[in-house]
Length: 551
Image (cartoon, rainbow, N blue to C red; front, side, top):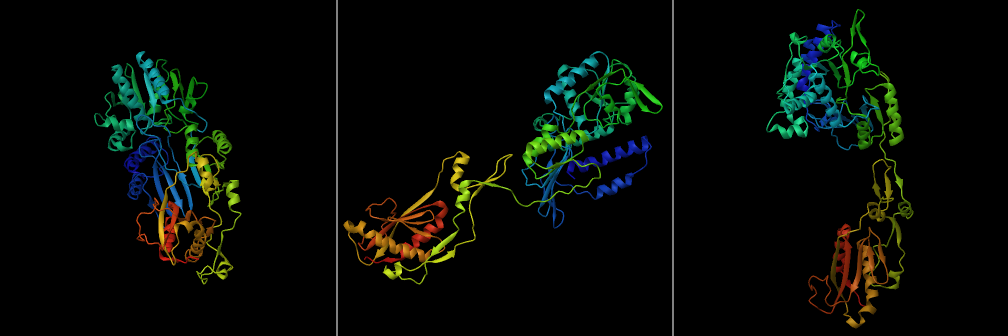
């Protein structure tokens, strides 16, 4: 668990136990002792902390937004990697930031799909509408019931109302019904680093969770005269105190019930959110409640919407997607959209349905024509035998080279990966055009002296340079045998290294006259790119240590 979750878990589990067993009389699935024993086994970890569970399994949590402590989990077993999102929110709200995750290589993303087909209005539009309906109700003397869970929406909406009450100088009371909400607020103050940037920025002058206008609610106030705003749990009016208050306030036309989030089918909240607002609601077989109050639905859910789900999938670009935690028709619609737009296999299994996801360890890539043409020439080198002499005789010059494989490379190229496109292998010469950039290359150059057996005059240099160049060619073919030495009329080429006879008295690349200006010296100009620095210095070493024979 994350540290905030470990702190809040005992409160949430105890509250659930109390509501389900003590109030509703359901069968006891676990006890308080079970909760204590369970939490003793919990290990808290930081966001982005990689935990090696055993030899094969590693996990890492990422910030999910949603509620305090919520995390997406990355898990890797051997070569297979997945992300399980849990509940998350891709949009920052007043009290928490947006979900954050690294770009990962994934076989599978398992994502919630609560709002698989919903696109929410902007946060500011929703806030303005919420404040308007609440203010209109209390200004007319009505009571406002906001069913919400103790963690998440309650803090978000309390911050919004508290700030609005302060600006408008309103004196109408705002209440929490749950002691759990008050305890949760304390943990928000403790884990301020988990909150939104706006909260962090204001924390130095004022803690936003120190609400000035929000107070604890007493049961005796349910039927007290006068307007008020009440946050009551649970959020779907499935039982608990929110249901108790609903029974009392729903028959009054001046009151308002605003449902700020998702409600599961079968709950009273879901029935109130239906297209046709009921005039009566059945609580149980013996109880029906008249509904004359205003019903207002506005999405302040901490779950991401359809756009957020698609944005996450586009960013992570996994090999497969699995949809969970949603309504089947909407999940099927989102599934079809993912397959159609991203060409990613997607499934939406039912509860207890097993799904087999193949784990792939290769990347399909297209190839450019230029790259394919470059692979047609095998990576072979013609290398001369090292036993030949250096005299420049006809026997040496006509010696038959042997065919050898220089290394195991078949082809060399650059893989270009772009969003929503298959990777593509191109030749390195195509890269500048693909990137829209000019080529900039660092090059080296040096004018290197070598000894000759007989001096040659400057006037004869051009006539004599070809035999000298050929002698150097034979020497380099021996000494640098692992690469191909190519010979043209005026120069030698080894990869990017170019060698030519220098006949300038003051060559720019001649750092110092190591020969002492003695006539028995020939200079070779060497130029190379930074990538072939090692080869260049080997060539320079060969030139410095050899002796040419003037024919």
